[in-house]
Structures are given as structure tokens and as C-alpha cells.
Length: 448
Image 1 (cartoon, helix red, strand yellow):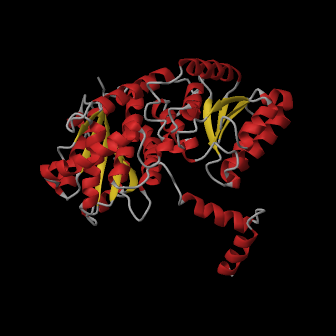
Image 2 (image 1 turned 60 degrees about the horizontal axis):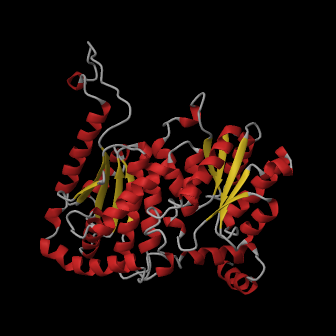
Image 3 (image 1 turned 90 degrees about the vertical axis):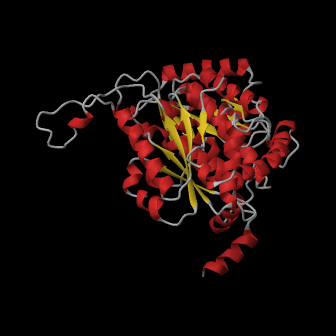
């Protein structure tokens, strides 16, 4: 039994049943390729059955190490980029206090992030904070040579060693990397860091349910066993349920590809809670990097309502009709604020007396959906009863499984990212990296 529900009723007027049936046949082949690990990118399908086969000893090891670190530090710095940090950040920010940086008497370390940009001011500001705080670092990289996190870790490693001394620094650094190869693995062995493995058959953007995401989430004080349990529930449902109407991942993959065929080239993931901002960012990488290749792919965008209704709302309502929306709707909030009565009623809000903020938010959500559908924008709706580790585990696996299916419907390899390497080659050439002399010569001529 799963908690997640996909509602397509506000999209049905934009397609016909026979169009679904046509894609359903192709989807069945894609699903078989996922489950049998025989499709494109078959060497990176370890995530498919990962939740149900997760090593319980590994979970306990991460929980024990996370508890040790949480006891000793005020801050954990996560060093990583893309899939090496987005999944963890998405879950942590969905579950933590909205103003965690200002919380007094925190029970768990504050999680900060570095290596996801090349901003000197950002890094310098972080060092200023770390000078005054007890902290540890987890560095996440398969190779250890990805420029952005490698730069950040070199500076952070130097800082942590100067602050605590080399021997104590070793106990404050955790490396999550390849099992056998790469510069970070070699460094971790040499220095004696606690180390966890990124599975060879799981790509970065699918890695949130590996130590890549689970370890920082555990340090932040959240239940990684429940996260895995939720994902395992969704895995079982996605694998065993062949009915299109009852399998949300299959329906989502088909409908979004149907819209793509009809010229809806942009999908907007909509949230109505600020805590879901990084779920959107994680989703954007998952789908953008998986599908955007060979001149194909839906462009993944995101908005936060109702904030963006006062900026992007006009375009969505009346701009070019090349988009559709997928709304993440959360039924219950954890806390409750009822709207008070005001005898003066200068703001005219007494008609909302005794309603909760969540009730108003849900009405705003429905009003927006109806307006956008009337304006020619199809709407899909993903509903979760509340935000917790179990429901987030379901949501993560749902999006991953649907992404694999969707990529196969597009006839692309949803598990590689050849285009990402292009900017890296140019950057190495411009920076004068050894081995890139010919590229440096060519690119220098282009920019003169």
C-alpha cells in the first residue's frame, strides 16, 4: 500500500484514451528493460531494486557514524555537486524546521553545502563561519577530481587540518566515493577517513537512496530506515502493478510523453510549500540530465506558488501554450495556525476567521489549477498525505522509476550525460590543465 496518488483528471481533456493505449504498449517494453536490466544504460540500473535489497548492516553503520558526528559538531559541511548533494538537500530541507539556521538548542547539526558553485565569496563566508564553530565534513565524489567539489574540498581539508590538527581532522572527514578507484578513494585510504561506497551501477542523479544521500540525512537527524522503507513500498508497487490506472509512475511517464508529442515541450513542477524547493531542484537534474539529449527531451522547470503566481503566473496563464504543470500537493501540515478575528477588519479577511493557513493554501492551489487548465495548461497532481521520511521515500522512487520509463519512451539512454563533459573540456583548456594543450590552443583562437 502506497501513500502517493497521481491525479490526471485536469489533464484528460487534452488527450484521448486511444493515445494512452498506443504509448502503453511501448511502455511495457521499457518496463521490462528496466526490470531485466537489458535496456539502454543497463550498467546503471542498480537503483531499480536498491531499496528492497538494501544492506541493513550498512544502514546501521551509517546511523552509528552519523550519531558520533552529530554528538561532536554543530555543523556538517556536505561537499558535492549535482546528484552528490541535491538529493540529500532535498530531503533535509523538506523535513527540517523552516528557520533551522536560527533555531536554538538544535538537536542535530546544521547542514551546510559547498562545492556546488565556484564562488569565492561563498567559500570565504563559509570559512568565516567554520572558524567559530565545531564542524565535520563529508566529501562526496566518485572520482574525487570533479572541479567544483575538488576545489572546495582542498580548501576545506586545509582548514580543518589547521584548525584541529591532522590526527583529529581525520575523524572529522567522511568520504563517500568509489569502492576501489579514484583520487578521493586513494586519499581516504591514506588518511584513514571513514568511507562509504557509491555503487558502481548507480549514477549520481539516482543516488539519493545510497550513502550519497542517506549519510547526510542521518546526520541531520532524520530516519533513513523509513526513507528506504517508503522507497521499497513504491518499488514493489511500481514493479508488481501493470495496470496503467493504478501505477502512478507508468501513468506519469506516458502522459508527460504524450504532451511532449503534442508540442508541450516544457514541464513545470509546482510546489506550494517552500520546504519543497529543493525537491524541485533535484527533480530538475533527474529529468533534465536523463532526457535532454539527441535533440530531444522535455525541459524541466520549477515554480514555487503562490510566490511565483505574482511573477511567473502571468506567463503560465496567457503565454505560449508549450507547457504543462505537475503539482506536488501535501494534504496535511505538521503545525496549525488558525486565522484570528479582527474587530476592525481593515484587511477584509474576517471571512477567513477560524480557517487554517493550510486550508487557504489548498484553495489557492485549486483556484490556480482551474485557471491554468482553462488557459490551456494541462495539470497533473501528485498528492502526499504529509511530508515525512516514508512519503518522501515514495516520492523519490516514483520520480526515479517514471524517469527511467520516460527516457525509454523517448528512445534515449536515461542513465548517461555525455553533454555535461563539453563544458568541462573547455574549462580545463581555459585553465591550462596539463594534457589539454591542443584544446587550449584552439579555444584561445576562438575567444581572441
